[in-house]
Length: 285
Image 1 (cartoon, one colour):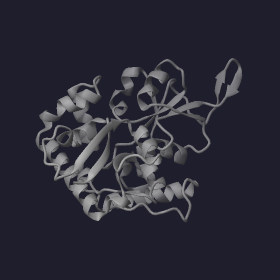
Image 2 (cartoon, helix red, strand yellow; image 1 turned 30 degrees about the vertical axis):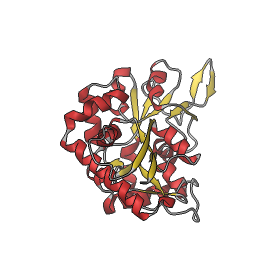
Image 3 (spheres, helix red, strand yellow; image 1 turned 60 degrees about the vertical axis):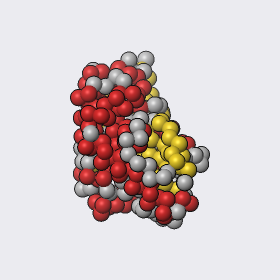
């Protein structure tokens, strides 16, 4: 019986998709799963540290981990209209302009949700050298903007639906910028597996993940307690708006379109020097 250390993000789309695994409503097909639920940047960091056999990760991190891990075709978050939002604490401002404080200019402070998140990669792609970047937990970004602790923030996850409640201002939808530049869906994150697991175990893990996803899609109401356990402040309406946006045809299978989106992300990362021409190519199992 293979022992698998599995990392799942606490985002509603993942707790929805993997509810069947977490509650053992589906067969684990003989797998012995040890599961941890963490925010995605912590999962990224733990993967870099060598933890987890299988885990959700940002595709930015996946590109940098391609020598040891590949992407399962099931469980990804990508699509149109799913991108991070660049928000501001004040209307009419932009991070390429200095912010005036006490009569002197200083760089704008821009909060990002983690050094290896796809959101940070997008900001660097489309706003190179603009503002002073600071990494923080995604859930702390909008409160910091509301109190003007920071000037700008790159907002992800459910913040796409709730940012107006904080009295903030949208500078730009980074997903829209990506779509105009590439004409492919934005790849945010996916399920990575270590090559050393071998083809048979990786296929088995993928089958279990797909069974769990299909269980959630067929038993939507059953997933609510699991989602609420890790997103206590969200209403059922917001939870399912999140699920309906991020769980789509490419979550079930990346397909050719998903693979093309990953190729575009890799190409753009190379253009700005985050990857080199000799960097390992990210494998889709």
